[in-house]
Structure formats: structure tokens, C-alpha cells
Image (cartoon, rainbow, N blue to C red; front, side, top):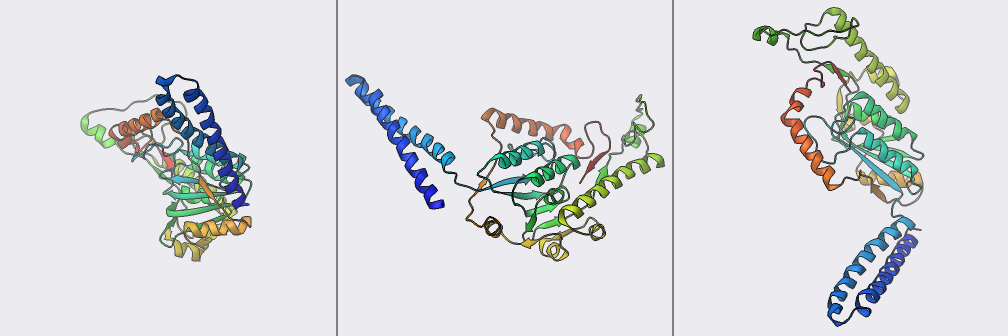
Length: 331
């Protein structure tokens, strides 16, 4: 079947190129007078090249070159791909990753999904959105941890049928953290006062400009505990593990080999080993295509400028607190 597809792609590409060359010859060589013939030859060459590219695109659609869609999750997990330190322009956020997985699910050529993970974790809900998208994929789904699959990355992996890693991969950190920056003493030293009008007893809970009392601390810790329970239950269900065994990991990270011994990872291997496993699951040879969001030149330039501005300005502060300087949650 793969050989037939290769032949079919080649035939379609050559036919389209030949037609483009013939049309170009008629339009730019035969029709014009002698002065235009030289330019016509050049235009024929350009038309032929364009025809080859166009024919290749058509051939790829008629005879697809892949049956496994690969989606990558790189860096801190956020809704829009922002954060500190700034990522490279074009690094997709959670919404874009979900769109790519759904695109793969709608593509009749994609029989399996490979989710490549290299992330320390990130925001709770965006991580869960990616997990749910992988879980909904109609076909085998395999997660593959490269350097790091921690916290939110592991949350995502729990939505896949299998999790593979390298021996030296960092895996685990099944826990939740909340953070806040404290600036009340700094205000006192500078003679500044913070005053804000709110309605609701705990509306100000977690603000960095006032001391946190025990009731607020208990309230925020309760939210952390609720997120943690949800994390444990999600992993236990998705990975068919005992919830108590997950809690016993104490949110530690483990090297891939130890994680495998503990049942946190299904198999140890390389990217090629994962493709071999998918071949076994599909019972056919596999060709993998990595799906990426489409970015125009203007979007890439704008994204790079935004990340630089973010790092120089508000990005440094948001490493410790959200845009309002208040309490935030991460997995």
C-alpha cells in the first residue's frame, strides 16, 4: 500500500508539472513575438516549478504520506503560550495544541496520535484541556516523554493509552502548588499604604499587600488540596493506578527507569521504539507527520516582540504572581 501511494504521488506530481509546462509554453513562448520569447522561456521554467509544487500538494492529499499525527507540548503550559521565561516565537499555547489534536482526530488519514511531551507543567485547566483532547482522539494515543514530563505534563499523559519515556527523562511531580509575593513590609518601609474596596469576605485572599491571616491561609490551602485530589483521581483513572500509590510519590520527580519500575511509565524507549509500538497497534507500517500551527510572518514578528516586551516588563513580576499580583495555582 505504501509503495502504491508513492507511485501514485509521483505520477500525479509529474502529470501536473507536465500540464503546467505545456500551458506555460503555449502562453509565454508560442503566443508572444520574438522579443518576448526569452522572457517566455524563463516564465515556462517558473511555471513548471510552481506546477511541481502544486502537483506535490495535490498528490499528498490524494495519497497521504502519513498515518500517525504527532503533536508536541513544549515548555510551560499556558493558555496562549505566554509566560516567563519567554518561549521561542511559534511555541503553541494550550488552545492551539487542542486545535491540532482535534484537527488530527478529524483527519481520516491519522489513525493514531503521538503526543511528545517536554514540559515542567503549568496552569491547571489548560493542562486538563489538552488531556481531554487526547482522550477524545478516536484511535491509539501514545505519550512520549523526552526530557521532562512533570506535573501538568503528566496530567496530559494520563489521557493517553500509553506513556513512554527515556531512561533519563524526568517524570512525575504529581502535585499542585500555589504562590504569592509578599510586599506588605516593603510598603511599610516606604511609607505607602494599600487600600482596596471589595465585597465578599475572601475577595482579598492572597493579595501580596496585606498580611495573610489563618482563615485566608486555610481557605487557599483548601483550594490547593481540592486541585490535588482532582489530579490524583485523574491520574488514577487514566493510568489505572491506585490513588494511594500516587499519593505516596509525594509529588517527587523520578528518572524514567525508576518511574517505569513504579508504574508511572509503561515502557522505556526512543522515538523510533514508540513508532514501532504504534506499528504493532495499527498492524501496518507507520509514517509520522508533526502537526504545527500555521503562523504568518507578521504573527511571528509580533509574537517575538510581545515576548521580549513581556520579559523586560511585567514578565519578571508575573513569575511570582498573576497580573493582579494575587495568588495563583500551578501543576
